[in-house]
Image (cartoon, rainbow, N blue to C red; front, side, top):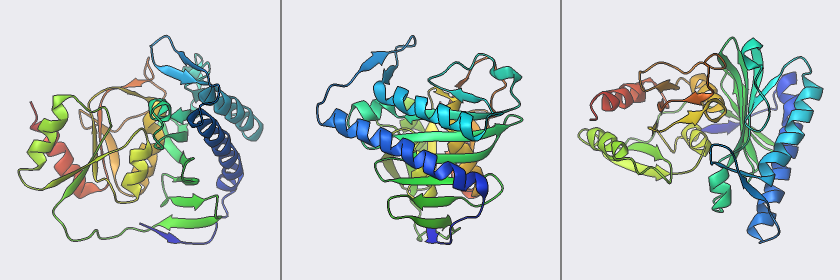
Length: 282
């Protein structure tokens, strides 16, 4: 849960907040225009995934602002050239529109993901939810903030004891049709009832911070900009995100930016349940 607090005094957070709020406004306006049926460009990338004019507009704005704010830190962005990335020990990791398919299907569960990667580890993370006008932001070594930029209210994560229930809340994508997901849930249900919660993109990480998802299995690939922010935020509250071999993801070091599947969990007790279920599915 999050409780109301004073605004942080950290300069990096305070410098990024107005930039990200402005990027959120751009993205939300694009979404509203799209939903209203106005002219809107959607193209297909080489990997056959969609890219919209909204992706590109937000990317252009954030790339420019990050260059102005931190000229010495390069950016690995889904929508820009990152071919020189292996020479970068420190970089921003950016997804200007995480959940493009959610956006296209007019579901509100899309985000802006930004993280700082240093020596292959995520040390600072932000996830912005434009339709809710909130962002989750913070450092790996500190509990994260939640900021409502519509209401200008700051909140801080507070570790809490969840309501007494045996139910495990499992987060799934809307397109989670792989039978592995049902096998995974079936195993957990041998000991605990399961509540399935479907949501799109990195929005599921926000739901985990809010206590609305306990475990998030993913059995199909993602990219580094999809997971870096979520992993950093989860690790900052005592949870985590690991590969299907139970190893935390590291960033900007492999030949490809593609990740394998992963398991995310909200705390260490849930990690045990999550990984035990993983080891017992066919």
